[in-house]
Image (cartoon, rainbow, N blue to C red):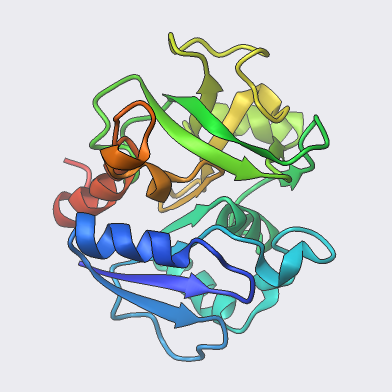
Length: 236
């Protein structure tokens, strides 16, 4: 499989993601600068990595959403290509109107960096198909991670199974106590209605090797493996 990692000024997780895809998942990976004006047809999937694109000026992700490469990313999204936005990448996807909602300042008004538990709400997506456990552990590192969407849209997203991950506790229970940033209904990751785009605040690339996890787990790898499996097998 061939993966494109889009790099913006201020991205800082592109090399972590590159390492995981190339050396752990064993895919063919390219770093694509945000001014790239050519087609991305040759790639099987696209990743928008974490970081602080454009220094989070104006609003996290909003300037990057208008970078030249995003016109092509939108075209690829419309054609059904798998796209994963991690942390700042999630913010960019929302600002680019590829995903519903908004990512607001954490309710604590502080930057949060810690490991969290995520309940897998829908394991029949291109990003979760290979996750056979009810919850996974990934780290978060963000200041604007509080997901918000209006009540009508939220209801529709729930009915359509587009809430993919929620923050939970060690037992997999979703509660206010297990919500690190104040996200509505503990939401940590959502997909578009077609299911080919996922925005996720936690960092799977930082949890894809057991040596990096205090819990000796590599749950992040399951998301990347799911994408690879889906591209080969589809929904079967």
